[in-house]
Length: 402
Image (cartoon, rainbow, N blue to C red; front, side):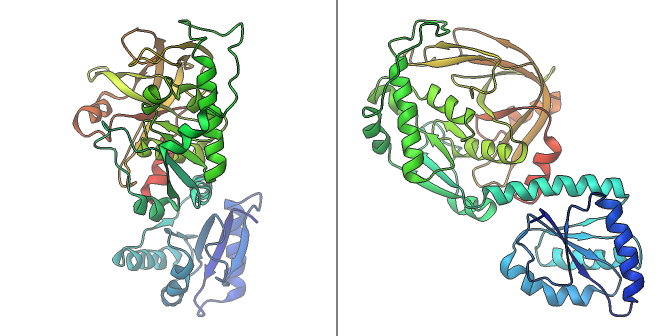
């Protein structure tokens, strides 16, 4: 099944043969590879494809759309995309339809312009729609409650279900703790790269990873967040390696029970295929736009090199000092009810190491006016850093999720 489907509405006042000829030429200019499914006036499969476009072929089709809308909304609650050709009063009819939708609180957009512009916009919307489709039905595990200090990082399971189609699943911390001791503990390799000697802690860190994999299987999870600081007292170790490895395998996994950070990682990965680095700002220069981000873990598929260290706050267990490749990055965060987001493109300038901060430390430069956000209206403290520039794609997703 093609990801894009084209449905049509046409006034009976227009000659079908003439309209069909114009339609074929118009669609061929937008989809030169023919990579779409043409459903015509049959709306029975509307909503079953990743991206469903309504091609308003003529003026006078507004009443037809109005009569179809109840049928459409029974099985599809997303935004309505109206494709126009600029011929036969297609644009005028689309404007009337979009106004009708807005009056009823239904999101929508008119797709209009040059063929190459339409092709780019449709390709972007297809990625957004495919990401939404991928997220729908996912199960998000919250292993233990969010850390006590995350007082502004609550999540709304109802909003997450409504806007992303995902379910939040509570996993008792005791379920993980009971599994840890049962897991095999691999010995530290002889050539283990270390900033400090963590050999004695390495086997226990691997057990936490194996236990989390078992939790994932038992609860059928596609993403998870861990109240990791509880492990410091219960097993004398940390979840840094476990989360780093799970992320590298494509399972979004966040620290400290931070669900909004996890949602940000999930959305970013579904859209871009990139794994995100969860970190919090430690210093901000609002004049230059430079920010120092730090955390004790980083997905193992991101760094060009790693060294193992102790966990910063506790000085025990295993933390990770990773060297994030310099270059273009995007800083991203959504709120726990998916109503707000922050998206900024920038450059990762350098890595550093100071022993009074979390172990992976990167300096990112964004626009100075964007850096003010962190001091005036932040969405919690953790943010996600993604390799590459993805603002347009993330913004398109959030436009119809907020």
